[in-house]
Length: 103
Image (cartoon, rainbow, N blue to C red; front, side):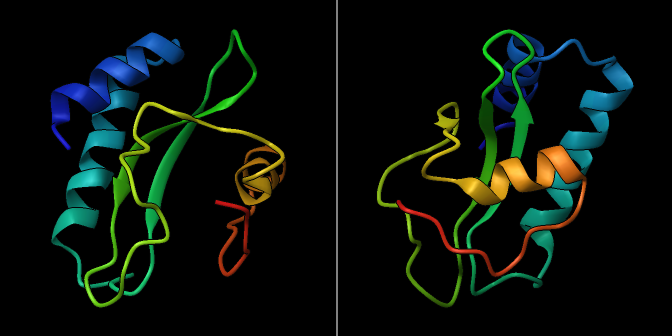
């Protein structure tokens, strides 16, 4: 995923400062080069202020195992019914790891 696409999605769905968007880009770049989380799908989701839905702005597929997602999910909503971990994290600010969802 390109930095430009990440920035575009953030600007479309959120009213973030340039510094905030730069931080999300930095984190995505760090995830790309990190050997952590090689066995899981990793996402950065943002909360669209208008629709009140989570939107996937970054997805790193597992290196060691198949992804749980067949197609490209970047730019799509992570709806509350099928992705409850996203909403748990966004409403509580707690990390959500090891939670299962319907995909």
